[in-house]
Length: 353
Image 1 (spheres, rainbow, N blue to C red):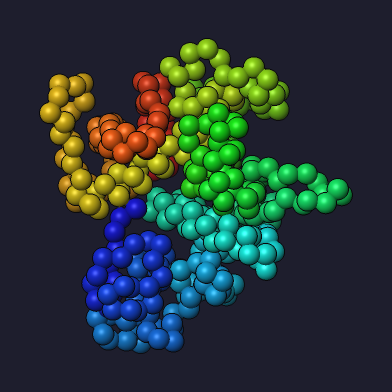
Image 2 (image 1 turned 90 degrees about the vertical axis):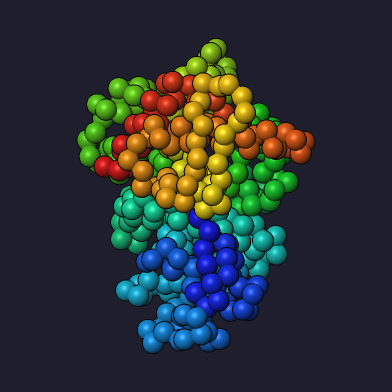
């Protein structure tokens, strides 16, 4: 995620900010130009260095609940921004815990949509396509005896379901430990689940199965049986040599989704590194080249997946080492084996197709 500047005073601001600490202006993200803008007091016009722009703007309806800081696109009549209009169901927000968790989940979802917009990936709402469009259900467990049991995170024909409890850091960490996962974040959930949607759009709907199967294997393998085997027996021995995670080894669909999510991780983290002008040049002999991340390094637009990997590996070595010096777990506790790098090359080409 790159840094932004306040359109009123030019102070550095961040993607999640809804106000400028320097000039006090209200801030909003404008998805059409992918920038942060300051708003005048009524919130209906953009401030450009003290001058009010004549064209009116609208803030997302979810802003009133602290669930969004984006503007609504001019032609949209829904009252919601390009990210929030994909919501199908949200929990009862009169419950304080639900409201707090939902706000955190919406922030992560906006991070997902920032990447989708940067990549210029196709987006179709559930309203436009009720059967296959991209939609989100944020649901709470029903504690009553007549309830349907715990809400499970997952994807089905474009509809992504997420348990609202995942918005709690404590609950999410407890689930991470219980499942033996090295990494569990809201943004990671969204990037993984949306990968299933884009598999439908970019592979299935284009009849591009041959290239996919050459890289990931045959997705016609029984999915339900594959997951049962994974949870009963665990991943195959030596999975680290071919997969980015143990779960990726369960089925070609999950291998694709995990690799897709990691591609988003890599590109967006490099975008952040570039925004801060970070460079890594370790004073040790290694099999990785020294890399200098200049401000012209566009991780979202770069033509070569190899260039991304060459930038990413030394950066993660440095940041993981910094985390260890603070007694924290590695930021990126994963190994990019040669087969995984090959899969990342495939994802790179697919997204740019």
